[in-house]
Length: 118
Image (cartoon, rainbow, N blue to C red; front, side, top):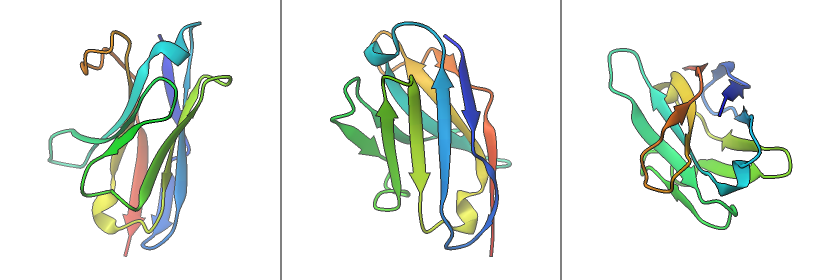
């Protein structure tokens, strides 16, 4: 499974941005997908996840109400819509696939940088 993120960049506080993660392979609809982020000098942290059908989502408290995860199984793509961005959202954002449904993400993308300035 190959995951490729896109959509990162630099924005001002309060702006919005949408990240995309395109997956290879034939079984995308069977994967639980997640987004994670890692800020400079910090450990990687969970951001959001979405179940196979897209009907169930879960968010970190720090992004709840501002970020929305979604997926398009026909396009084998998962998205992260980020609104009301804050400077402490600055990080490298990674998408990940949990292909066995065990909540252990076994495939990761290369990451995309998101920088939010005040």
